[in-house]
Structure formats: structure tokens, C-alpha cells
Amino acid sequence: MKVACIQVDVQFGKPELNYEHIEKKIREAVLHHKPDTIILPELWDTGYDLTRLDVISDVNGEKAKRILSTLANELSVNIIGGSVAMRTGGSVYNTMLSFNRNGEHIGTYSKAHLITLMDEEKFISPGNKTGMFTIDATPSAGVICYDIRFPEWIRKPFLEGAKLLFVPAQWPIQREIHWRALLIARAIENQSYVIACNRIGSDPNNTFAGQSLIIDPWGEIVAEASKTEEEILVAELSPSLVDEVRAKVPALNDRRKDLY
Ligand SMILES: O=C(O)CCC(=O)C(=O)O
Image (cartoon, rainbow, N blue to C red; front, top):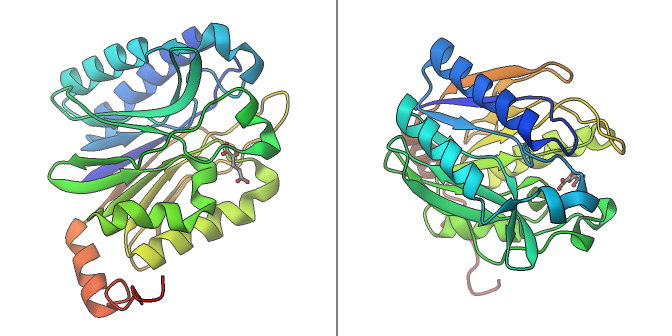
């Protein structure tokens, strides 16, 4: 399975411009790399323009669903839609919408851990469910940015059979050392591929770290993007390597279920 992370800049609070840009990048990725699966960054539609989310968020994710599903079907590519600001009822969620290569909606995951350091919880409501989906017959999971600091939460989809973990993010540069270490740790402890797609550029509050990463189930970095440039980061994954690593080091089986 060939995956492509679309590392881009995001215009603060300008969904129209961001839609134009992301569509261009998805088409470019397919034309040049023919990936099976594409992943986008966190909140690529609005950025962290939290105080305007009541106006600029996507009602029921209708626009994201329509556009991502159409592109997935037309280009015959699975799209893990990063996340968008989705308004449902009176609440806004930070939500990953995923589509298979027929354009079918295969997964919805709303970020469970909201980053209080960035006031996210004042404007966004948390999701309460794990984000499992199946791409090209491989059981997979999605979590979003700050979620990677919570290994207990990430373990859940792996106990349900996940072999790939997709992580869209808007991770700031001042904690770049954590980004790398946490992602490698999540790959090693779950013996899983981790495909993490960050943004570049700045908003009024932060500069973002780029460095999208694709990590194999042994914890080796197989591809890494730059800190400052837009980039389509591509790698070939072999889901059978997950089984090989799990057989070699049977740590998941050796958990003390009687203790925790
Ligand atoms: O945990 C961090 O340091 C960054 C998380 C973050 O930026 C986010 O969840 O959007």
C-alpha cells in the first residue's frame, strides 16, 4: 500500500482558499505518485481560528463529505480526510472523515483529547468513540494530534485489530521533540505503522513544525518531510510487516491483563 501525506500550509479562517489548495494538492499527489491512500493534516479547512468556528465550521461536515468523497471516487484513492471543523447541533467537533477509493464514507472520528493549552476545549466538543476503519482490507485507526499523548486511548483500536495508525496534526514547533518521540513510541508499543501528517507555516498564535513522519512497526522512520516546506511525503507500506514484528516480539500478547 502506497501512502501519501499531504503536508501543507493552512490559511487561518479561510475555508474557501484551503479547499482550493487541498484539492490541487490531492490531484498533484495522485498524478505524480499514484498513492493508494492519502492523508491530510488536522483542521486543514479552518486552521485554529477557534473564535470564528461558530460561523466558519462545516455544518454536519456536508462540504467535506461531498468534496472528499467525489475526489476519492474520481481519482480512485482512499482519503483519510485529516480533520475538519464540523458543526453538529449546537457543537463543533474536530473530525476526521475518511473515504474509500469508491468514494464511500468509511469512518468518522472526532478528536477525544482537546488541548487546553490552546483553549481548544472552549470552542470544540470532544468525541467519545475510537476511530476504526478498513482501507483496502487493512484494519486501521485514526487519532488527532494531542491524542498521541494518551497511550491508553491509542491502545484501544489496536486491541480491536488495527495495523495502521493515521495521525493528522497541527503540532507547534516549540514541542517538535515531543512530536517525534511520541509518534515513534506509539509505533513501537503498538507494533504498527504510524502515518502522521502535520502542517507547516504559522497562524497568529503558533508556528507549526512540519516534519510529517511515516514510521514502520519496528519504530524506524521510513519517510520524513521538512520543517518548512509544503511536501507530498510518500512511502510504501507492507501490512504483513506488522504481523512479522508482532510475531518476533510478542509484547502485545505478554500484557498482564490480570494487572491492568
Ligand atoms: O500536544 C501538543 O504539544 C500539541 C497538540 C496540538 O497542537 C493539537 O492537538 O492541536
